[in-house]
Length: 173
Image (spheres, rainbow, N blue to C red):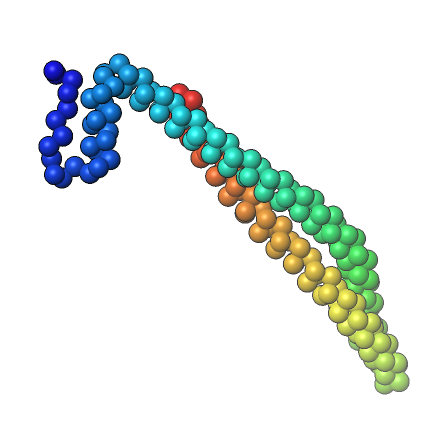
């Protein structure tokens, strides 16, 4: 009996002993068949696991895509609100520069005083515009930071997806 395995070792665990008993009683053909079936079952389970992971990744990617669309719409709206303020700020700066030129050209103290009062008004306008601009810019930076964070997460998901696809290719042979 060359197919019989001897189970004498005290060191062998009960699982090892049961495995040896199976192999001895099955015979080589049935053992090979059982091992092939176990391998097929294991591969199938791994494929299912990977496909489930891919489905989960795709759901998460879809959420990030929708968030990007929403954030991009918000970003565009903020920019639309911000553009008139930037234009107004530019006009105020030009008016301020013009007043400085007038003041430098004027030699009479009363003219300089009138120009200085106009400049104070313009500077007050500029402060108000800048305050509004900063509010919009802060919102814009927050949205862009969220977009950047989501983009990084999305790329991480793509890397994970590539690794899982590679593992699936290995399983498929």
